[in-house]
Amino acid sequence: MNTRSLALAAILIAPACTSVALTRPPANDLERSVIFREAAADGWHGISSEDPISTAVMRIIDPADVDAESRIEALPDADQIATAALALGGDPERTSLRLEAWIERPGSDPVPLHLPGYDALDELDLRATPRALGDTPPTALDLTRTMARQGSRVLVRAVLEDQSGVQLGEAHESRFRIEQMGWHSEYHPSVVLAKPGYSAASEANFRFTPGIAWLHSYRPRPDEQGHWQDWMRATKMSIGPHAMLLQFDSEDEVEVGLGVTAGFWGGVLQLGFGYNLMADGGQDRQYLYIGSSMISLAQAADRSFGALSGW
Image (cartoon, rainbow, N blue to C red):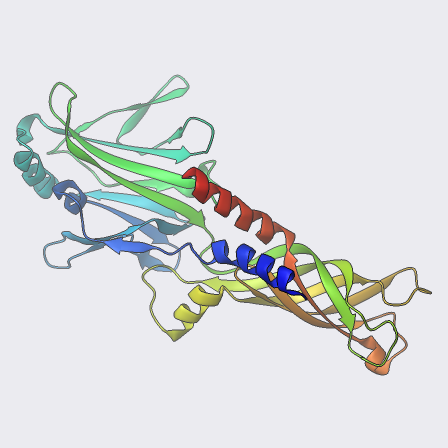
């Protein structure tokens, strides 16, 4: 591989490594009063981190990663919301809380999502129904029953309103990026450069060949800590079997290779080793390859152009 190829690989890999969750303190009283968190199948993982004694929100993860098979919970604290209303010059007896959620899509209008207890179905449209501060039940957004898919972004918004419907202070907004968390697997179609494992052969050159890999990886949640989690965040490593259509021997119309692939940064970089099932035997069967997943390349390019457009 020459210098130009390495430079191109660096450009493609860089955007794949930039999706890092940022932590910050609450910006206003409302952010301390309404907790948004992920409800995962293997336990609770905080999107907002609350103080165990006062239950006040101490930090916000923004943007947050949420398991696509989970749900987002909104947990309002009526007493703290009333305190926030007073601080904004409102009357808690005449102030209401509005909770809304949307799927954000580039180039189109947001799609409203159902938050039980805080909206009503009006024919084919969802109509928000603000709740009095003395009656603000917890609610949840079940992601499995929405049109949200991996890569989608969900906006959850909390607003305080006076009796005339005028907003008090700033809204509390959290955006969630839907991602596969924990252990998961994906198929990666790819076009790679493969080379026979024996250097003495005249055909022992890198050649383009199509293939597919079934890669397994682990994506830590933002609140998981440890050396293993740090390694997986830094490398986004994955491993699994692959199948290749090789073209090493001009006399064979079809050559099939099976082996193992290690992927990095979501499959943007792939390294593999395997055996050519159609070869005669011995070292002739071995091959190695370097390549990239077509899906990961497309996603990396989308993130790059999305960052330029502000999405």
